[in-house]
Length: 80
Image 1 (cartoon, rainbow, N blue to C red):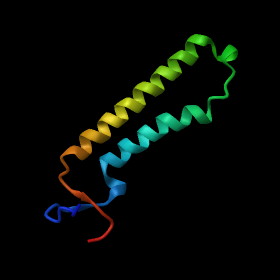
Image 2: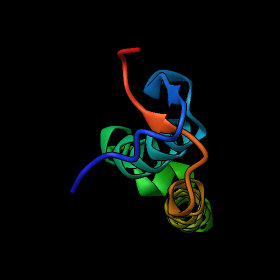
Image 3: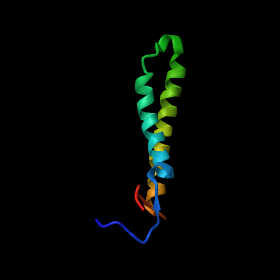
């Protein structure tokens, strides 16, 4: 696949799709990192709510990422 050289270059670190990807990865990884909270201390409802929020954020991040990259206005790259 050849890149579309007609589009201007955008640094990937400044792209909204990069932020969307980071939000998605964070929503997946952070519950695993902090998942050792005692369910009895946190409460069953609180744990279910936290899991639901993580699921919703990860799905929303994936949709946002797809939306941003489906019709790009710039190509991602570090060079000129």
